[in-house]
Amino acid sequence: MDHFELKNGVLHAEDVALTAIAEAVGTPVYVYSRATLERHARVFAEGLAGVPDKHIAFAVKSNPNLAVLRVLAREGYGADVVSGGEMDRALAAGMPAADIVFSGVGKTAAEMKAACAVGLGQFNLESEEEGVELAEIAAQMGVKATATLRVNPDVDAGTHAKISTGKAENKFGVAYDQAAAIYARLSALEGLNLRGLALHIGSQITSLEPSRAAFAKMGGLMRELRAAGFTVSHMDLGGGLGVPYQIGAQLPGPAEYGAMVAEVTGDWGATIMFEPGRVITGNAGVLLTEVIRVKPGVTAPFVVVDAAMNDLVRPAMYDAWHDFAAVRPTGERMVANIVGPICESSDTFAMGRDIDVVAAGDLGVFRTAGAYGATMANTYNSRPLVPEVMVDGDKWAIVAERIEPATILAAEHVPDWLR
Ligand SMILES: *Cc1c(COP(=O)(O)O)cnc(C)c1O
Image: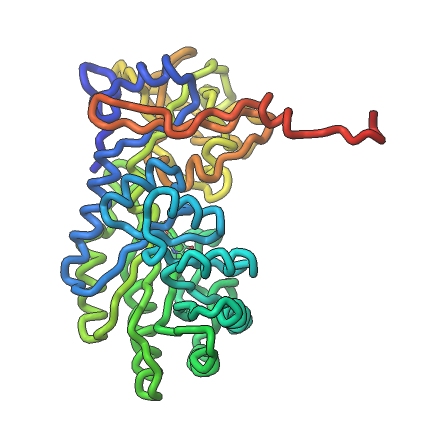
């Protein structure tokens, strides 16, 4: 459920007409609903009511906007970060360092040092080599780095290949059959406090079965390690729960997911950790865009909008579907292709789609754009970096400014020897 609804024939974010935001800020622009973010954060936490001892770390990469992080910090969420830059954002949003988890296959020595210096809560180690390096850094600094070992459970999450992370051939974690030996070696290191296992099998997962299978497999490894005398007090189950991108799509929600986790982990006697991203932010944002013009096509007309693949790359990169809706729908429908202005055929949001009738100058939104939207934006074709707005009831504010091409141009230099 979200708070983007028609009121008096105009699409609103909470109590603010999207027409007002477009007029004041221009388009394209991302619009987030604070009430929706809060609702999703609460529904996810409530879904885990059957898991008594837990820690929830929002996956910052899905939407790293400072105001978004602030909303989640106020809900008591920690953060899952994958770079020093994301760690700094989580800290700036007021998330305690102890509630931050550092994931990622390529943590640099500088990032690990910076994280140790602030007392970061947990490193999810992706290899033995990384664990050895972190242990040395921590020992030199006179601290112990708290860590889990990320294991690749070799389970197919059944999602798009580019966001599948738990198959044996993927780059993430250590191989399941080597995990126990690596855990034993890393446990002996002075600078590490190795306390558990981590996994994350992919994103936009639309069935509970792959997760259930992966969690059960990890439970087996946990028992094996404990039987050998090692401490396994924390089990990080990652993120990945999918969201409905199409109206009417049926997929498991936080309640079903939480019940499954409670069932699988009920007798584990461990702190269960979660790293949700998309399920919190996905439906909390739309990308607001204006139709530049409609041009005839061979199969269907092309609706050319002022948003493009540089603003929202998911359709081009993951073949993703985003529902499109007019801000002032007339009730009439048309079949159209929706494309952006970028000089690539992959700059296509929809082909042969049944949509609200729109014409030049009309506003529309791509829904469910709050996750992996603005965060993946770039300036391809020397376009501006897309701005972001947050709505709260009848208030709204720009939470990320549009970065103009002139600003980016000013940061480029022609060397003397080319003058
Ligand atoms: C991307 C990622 C997540 C979040 O995934 P969602 O599908 O957005 O929930 C969580 N943990 C790790 C390690 C990730 O890489």
